[in-house]
Amino acid sequence: MAVPMPNAKLDGPENAEAVNTLRVGVQRLSRRMRHLNADRALSLAELSALGTLARCGPMTPGELARKEHVQPPSMTRIIALLTSRGLVRMEPHAADRRQKVVAVTDQAEAMIESSRAERNAWLARLAGELDEEEWAALRAAAPVLHKLAHL
Image (cartoon, rainbow, N blue to C red; front, side, top):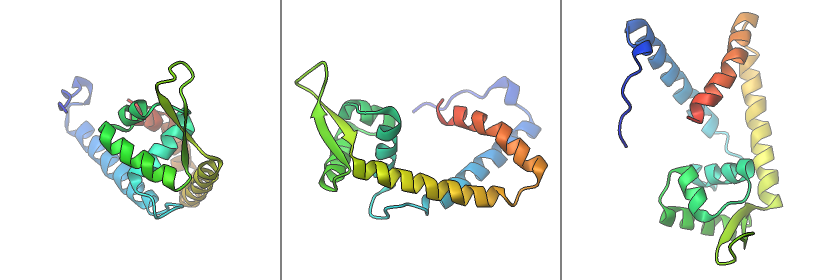
């Protein structure tokens, strides 16, 4: 994958420091949150695929592989494992009967909801340690962080 060219707006030592601080903060927070897995038997790739299916709805294995940035054979293995655990099911494609789509099961929905609730509660406890000004800044930054995550 090619490394994008730096944005001229972000050149300079004050922005380099801010970008570095953001990177480190996001990485550390993400690492801590990963330790809260509801089902420790699932890998991060498996959990990510489930989350994508829950957010985006049923899709073909190829579409899921593209969204997850993995090769189709890797996604085939992930889907097989998730199917064997009763977390996803294969359904006929609505427009092309030669294809199948992957969908989450009720069991997976419950697991995902439990995981989200646990992570939200954990994050809320952390945010409770912030002062009002820090919490206001974080609330304002949340949509921007969400946008960055989806660029």
